[in-house]
Length: 310
Ligand code: NAD
Ligand code: UDP
Image (cartoon, rainbow, N blue to C red; front, top):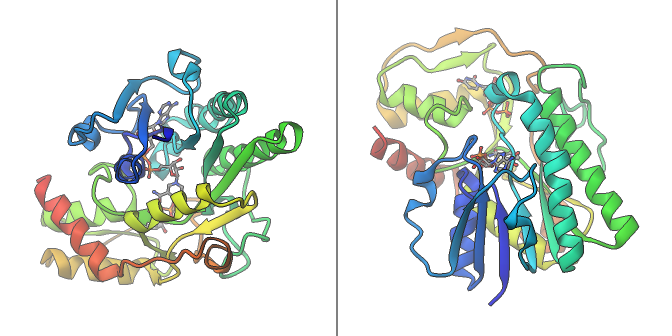
């Protein structure tokens, strides 16, 4: 039985990944400090092959002495509302924290996936974004703590790969959604569903003409797993290329939730990317991966989840 470590496994994507890896017959150790994760996300996992350790990856502890064949590092706050509240924690996760995990991977000769992000492309001037694009990030802007932490995490991974031959995997995750996003997370999907279901106005930042491309979490887990099983050490975009404006997403969720309130327009946050869509040619070619869940199916499952949380 393959021994796997998931850092950040009590979070939104991490909890789905733990379940996915268990379904593949792995023994899963999940490490999380609950800074943005939730106990309820993993409460339903009853498998004897699942172990939870409450720990902070930026600090060494007994968790960092285990034996693992694969390590998935998803531990990092990821919502723009956290960028203002806990910027130092964010910077520490992908630097000190990721270094601790890279050391563990080096000692175990394990494969290690770093959950990077489309945010490494910043406010992109190339559309859609392919992996060869170096990005357009404002290092001193409000998003800098997250974007630069992830860029550093990629560079740190490459340094381990070049210096020690560590088996790194770099995934650039594009906007992902689904059940178990925190209701108060502040990101577009939980905001719109909670506002919609509570009969409040959906909040549109700016004029809502900025675009995002939304990937359902089950597709994301398959992409992560496929990347770790592959020999690819270059960054790989994983996301769904179906692109929508924020206003289009608002109209869709408004209809789904039966909300009748007019939209509430709010100021656009600083450096909010104007457009984002992954070029997934590399994932298709190397991993034979592409998203399978339609936006309609994904939003339907998400609606059921948020309804159940009311
Ligand atoms: P999330 O906040 O739900 O999950 C992150 C998890 O990491 C949480 O459970 C949190 O408690 C844990 N964590 C944070 N710091 C930790 C630390 N120091 N030690 C131990 N655990 C820690 O967010 P998510 O949306 O599930 O994102 C998961 C990963 O994917 C993150 O690394 C994020 O940057 C990346 N990502 C997500 C998206 C997306 O759209 N969801 C997009 C790009 C990248
Ligand atoms: N957004 C919005 N209203 C909200 C939350 C977000 O209009 O209540 C917009 C936000 O300005 C951004 C997009 O939706 O353009 C996606 O925001 P999110 O925070 O989910 O993630 P991002 O892709 O910006 O990191």
